[in-house]
Length: 154
Figure 1 (cartoon, rainbow, N blue to C red):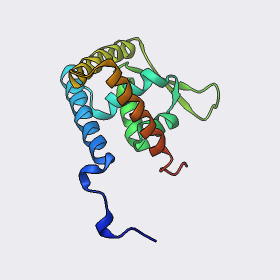
Figure 2: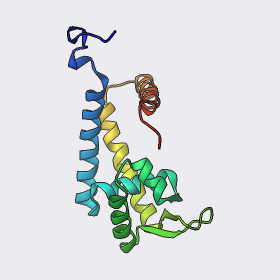
Figure 3: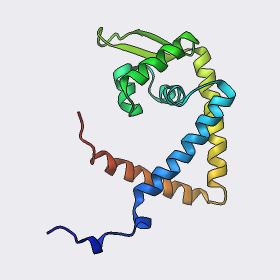
Figure 4: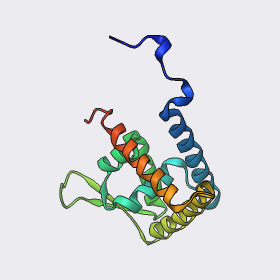
């Protein structure tokens, strides 16, 4: 039997809007900083951030992790490659795929973006104990894993 409309949780009790709002503000702050300091757009910032974790990575895998349209990723990679921030090469694992890595310039830029992220994190978590921060991160990790089960894998 489906729940009646009167038994819905209050909007303030839903987790997703809170997490989504937090994510949007943090992304906006990161992109504003990356744009003003380094001339990066949102997709370029996201690619550099992901490459700092996953490189080398195929364009297909990068698209999956970024949760973006392949055309957006391809355009941004082209621009980053022209600026010598990323390098593209044919994959050794699958000759049909192109892998992307950060260049020396890209690694330096990623380091700068990471320092900025650490500084934003300090502002965000000010007043919380290390134990509270670890507990929050653990809870968020669990929510991410549960959210993944809600998405159809292709």
